[in-house]
Picture 1: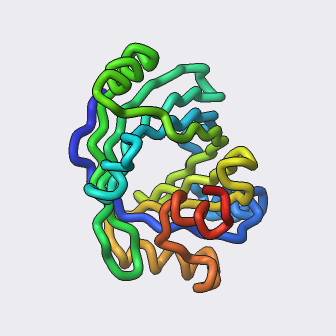
Picture 2 (picture 1 turned 45 degrees about the vertical axis):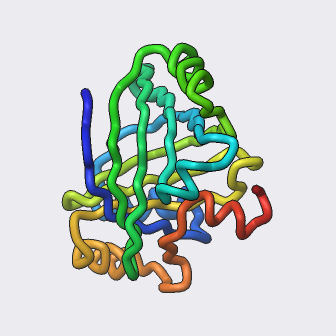
Length: 185
């Protein structure tokens, strides 16, 4: 399934215990969407054209569902939009079938893999709000966090209140920004 120009409103919740948060979500009646493992391959030119000139990133995500064993490859261009209090972006996604061939095409165009990260993700839905409990490999980002993806800021505030999330744990930073803060880049 191809999705184009999908608007995304989200925040990251840092300093969480994944098991505790999952228990809270289940107690509230959240529905399990999927449990998956991902390989996220980030691509840019040697001059970081995509990041520096477009304030975006280009990613190939290989997702394996642990519930169905289905494997999916998705190419995404994620364009950041600066906004106070919430991270807004436009995602342009398309499914792909051959990662190696696509990487060869990018290489021919002067674009290379600059980072590959491995993530475990468990996703829930509650009242049309998506919760992703993420744990990366230690080299990519050593601390677990949760992303909350909403349709509007009122939904976000409601979920923050219901889950009793301290304000200081809410971040609008990208994983790249968080990695820089930890000296991982």
